[in-house]
Image (tube, rainbow, N blue to C red; front, top):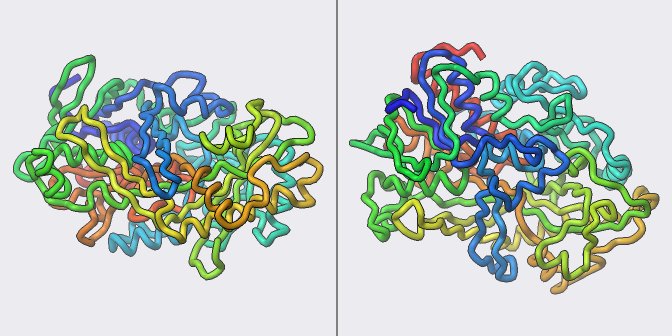
Length: 521
């Protein structure tokens, strides 16, 4: 450890590792990456087949929402990676770029074409090493290996046939031309290396820079707050080894702590809603009322469960099929993304209520998924100390439009599971059965959880609720940027890993330009 660095990156997650690796490769500016978790060199991280064991482990922050009226008063678990690589090390390995509409929105909100669709395609081509069907939209020599699961479970083929028979087009690659369309069904893209192991952003971006003298990666280091002096970020206070340390940032501080920890750290540093900060006795450095607001997450319902005729163990990432579609034909882009879960998947309420089997080979699930929720929540402080827990009022399913969309998704999943194409695989439907009216609504509220995609709590834009501008700079604070899922104005229309890597790449470009360093990546 040195006392000062040119750039201090807070959070070694999906985006933070990208930024650290890219900046270190320039070979001049000194970079410190602080990560609260460990290095993640364990089987649960590297083996895609057992990724669910990360949830609730020491590699998970284990956040939970406040009781949600829309979930029948339940607290929703909100897993988040606490390990080098963040969500890219612990989540389900689905690589979904997002829809053209997402990047159109990001460009409109910021006024910056660098967030538009054409720019996003260029960044993704730089990121990916894609070995699937050829497309001019895909990259083939980037740091992130992206592939199709090898030898998926046999039911996947039947699911593709069933979904296409319902008018959801079957495509070979959901991240190519389908990004601009009205929906599709496909085998999922996954971030898996040719040897079958997970490729996190820690492995892809930090690994090649290991040993560089200008890069320091410190795990077991929990960021407490940013030091801001006369409107300029000058350093970071963090805890490591049972003690508290301060490190100076000569040129830049980057918050990449995710949709929950980033707004918390901003508020503890004096940046947030003035009334909330004063209530906790925190000196107000900058009044930004949007910090912590606009909280969003994708909703995943557990689920539509079908018993196999012949038991089949999960393979690859246990989620080898997905589809995108609209709950209403008038919508501009797909708002539903159900997923195959290759085991019986229910919530803490619906699983026991239906007596779902615990043997993972006996059943599979089509989990209805909502990717454009209307409901909005908020992340708030409970006290002025970093040790004080954060309060997450997720507000899930508070908007009737979200419930209506999930009803459509549930009907679709049941129709697919009970279709003629699935007859060779399905013995019977285990959950939920033909529910209607209040019973269906009650089931949905008991079954709904999340995709683990907490986002949008420090959104970029130009309106009074925005927190960062199109260059990811915190409004009114020099030398402080945010680069993670919290900057999304609205949550991306698909699994958020790929958009987070994109955000990290764009941040690296912007910071390198500030440092006056030509980029060669």
